[in-house]
Image (tube, rainbow, N blue to C red):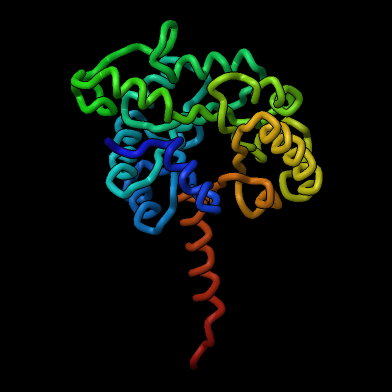
Length: 255
């Protein structure tokens, strides 16, 4: 059985290292494979801002499985059918946008668990190996290891962070600085000090409740981040393309 998300994250954190991931937004699963071969720990397969359909998501999930990455899918919104679809396809965790209350978090948690009132049971899906053999063990293992991760990216989410982190089943949260800065009416980079102050409040609340707090790395959040992400595949491609062109244009000219 594949070692699942929670067990993987906790093993890395216990070794004194923060799990490092990246956002995958292109449809090409080679980008996920590159992160896996490069030594990253996890990826967010982004179906909120990415351009991928369900088949592209599945291809990324296969690439993650083949290269030892923990695959987290960011769904479009807090929808039980979308959460179930991602997990059935093989996601080991789900990132839920714009969670602003404990009720919203609890609804997402229920949609990620095999339990009364929770996600639908179907053994003939990729995540279950297309078989109901050993179902009870599989369901128990998944319930114990799936990561349901609220994305804290609104003022409501910040204001209600203690209540969100107190929800049973919320053991990881992620800080979304871009949408949060927009919601607060501030600039993501120019007002970095304000965002760092908000992050410190969010991380402290998470840690009070025994919840792991994740954030984008390199923005001043690293010290309190239990895990984090480095850019995205398309962002990294754009940066590399810009750098290559700049170096070419600045090269010494020989007449």
